[in-house]
Length: 338
Ligand code: SAM
Ligand code: SF4
Picture 1 (tube, rainbow, N blue to C red):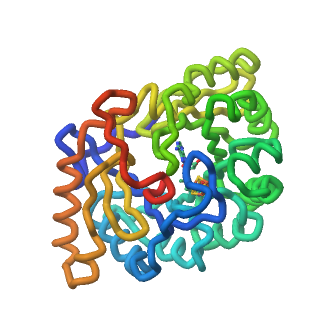
Picture 2 (picture 1 turned 30 degrees about the vertical axis):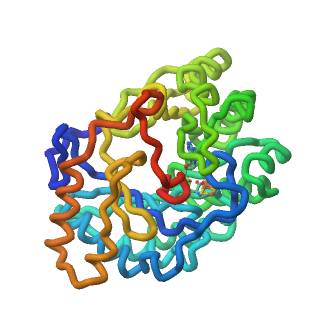
């Protein structure tokens, strides 16, 4: 059960307080997942438009010391393709909240290089990791990611467990007619390897713009499918977007993220920063706030903090996927940072 918290500085008009910051460190990736990036032709950001580690660390310090952020997740694109990622992790791990508490630093990765980097990242201060994996079959993995790297990802998951990153979670985007028949296989995989599988509903953030509601495999369907083989009990829900279910036989738990069928916007405690320093109050935000310009033109921490507070104050109540007035963001998932 999550602890009741007092409101922090990043409060919006719906009474939500932002505590969790997602930082994208790059828009580049070594995979081309069909639900995220186009096969080719994507325009990457020029390097000088991407925030340096020093710039990211300055903003992160402001978020943690002055704006109430308590946890930071690094994402992308693929964060591990950026050089010396452990250096950034160690800079962020040194941050302390006003109460003197360390910040929880986590990572979302496709896992392809974790076999090499898991220990280094843990030593730098990373505590937890989410590895994305949508098929346990090599041919299908290749069709989804457009890369032949299943063995690397499986080795990466094992390396993360051995390195002591805890918890290791595996993110699975369930897509109708692509991998829905592997839902139980993933449950078995999670039970055997001691990792928590988190099923994510497919969202309209694919670069190709081919998402349809019919392709979404709902969280309810996933829970029913697994529960019919391995009985499940719901775990009390905190601020996190995942609804958690534990196996009745004690073999761990699964999470389902019902972003589309049961949006959790009312409990949202997240804000985001893209690799080029655009601040977003929602994954689906169509307006963003440029932090890079003030950062590179002498703005004080107080000035930047005020801009961020104003943006959060104006955060909308939630996205409207599936409704007629839903407006698709112009950026795709890899450009925002999922
Ligand atoms: N490259 C890293 C990875 O794949 O884990 C981090 C970035 S990726 C954009 C973050 C997460 O977003 C992954 O778990 C990925 O599966 C998920 N994702 C990407 N496109 C999505 C979509 N259209 N709907 C739902 N989840 C998506
Ligand atoms: Fe790359 Fe992650 Fe997007 Fe796949 S989901 S293309 S690994 S950024």
